Length: 160
Image (spheres, helix red, strand yellow):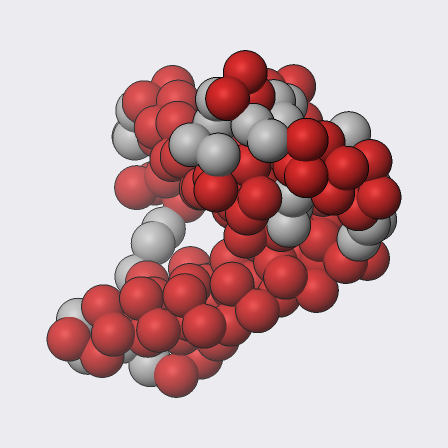
């Protein structure tokens, strides 16, 4: 079982595409700006290279870990400590029978949804509550991450 770095990269970059749509003024962008106190002037005076660069880096971190949740074949791989040379014949037989099971976009989206709902929402929600942000803020931002986790999970799971 090898890591698919291209799938991880594409999944990470998908967050930028989703963000461009999600935070567009015609979707949730205007509401988000109102909830955060962001203005066009603040946005123009920010270091967008730093913001986008760090956003991609963080998305890469998420995609790297998300693969272990959406690709079930990493479980048996972990049982042999990642060393295929020491694996027993039963491992190869198992992988021959089940190595491609549940490797679909839909399956990855399902696990991505669960990870977003049970990981991203509580993190965003907890921070927002302490920052005294509104429920609208929580739903806009956690909704974005739930959708991102779904798309990222789908890409990673389906791309063998």
